[in-house]
Image 1 (cartoon, rainbow, N blue to C red):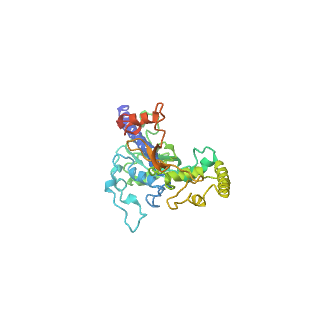
Image 2 (image 1 turned 90 degrees about the horizontal axis):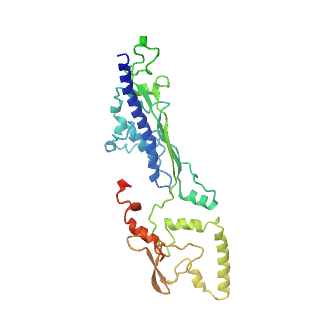
Image 3 (image 1 turned 90 degrees about the vertical axis):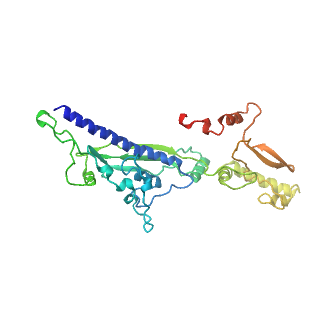
Length: 352
């Protein structure tokens, strides 16, 4: 009995400690992946100041609400009661069932808690922008304008308090002063009062769990669908940012050369002033290309060959808008046909 009872009780307690460690790990490691699907063409949406305290982004706020009871398996968002419109920055934890209910406080063996000065509810730091910087000026300019992503770090740490093991057991047969840290059961205080008073001497601190990822997507947030002659849209603006950037040494040279060329063409009566004026706008159906502005065309491919129709010498003519065919091995065309409508050619997502 001297051996069996302590071993049995310790086995139950250590099983809880292991499970709580995994809960802490889940909160930190799963939350960071929620940052990979955000729109980094704009700043991340901020959470209301009081919902909950410390939640700087909506992602972190929602993660804290979900893990309010330390696990995601029993998240109950459908029971969430909207905060009163008179207090839009109110504390959501008052109404969110995972936080308001105390069913997760009924621990027999051990109790885990975020509420402790040394504990750490899931926390995600602001993105460290500039990561992945290549040190190329034109690359840096583009990066600053079109992405707010970077290194995202999330971490969490739980405190666990003993509610089962006696601090001493059969001391007359053992040289160990304490079998376990303080037993908090039956002290007449609430679970959270106990958790607040927990220290490294009388409670168990789970090792802080954390994960960092680089999420600096430059992905377009709208379909790249630009018709010949269009000079607007997200895709066009990104191309123009590179093409017309003064840091791009070729652009100032092109601007100087084109000005000289057009000046001489006009003075030698080789170019009509009307045609020159039509470079930036349509005049009587006449519109000319401006060499200082990029010209591009791209359209989502919908089953057929990717083509654009452009008027050449008065006749509508179709051109491939990607390297669809090279009349050698046609790798792009063959890859598309083999992939079909499946992402990366994966016909069964569960098996890829």
